[in-house]
Length: 79
Image (cartoon, rainbow, N blue to C red; front, side, top):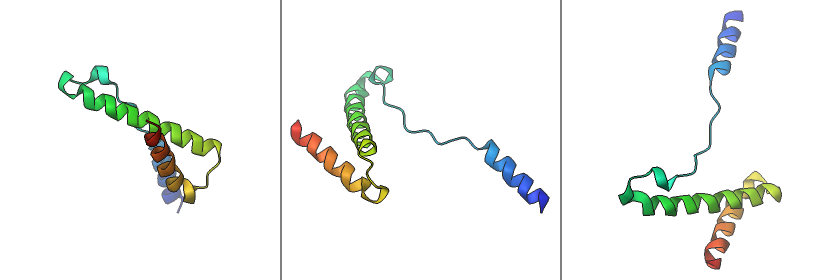
């Protein structure tokens, strides 16, 4: 039994934490894909802004998707 606990502890300690997706850097993309990279970066920034608003307003996890979709729709309507 001690061996199982020891192996489980080692497995937990050796795992790396999950990282969020980094923002796309259009300057590091081939010129023919730069426009798409700029659009993706703008979308990522909008998503992060909405996620930050959800965190600040302490939206419950069950309501978060609805809140984020509404926020993104509202931002798209402004533009």
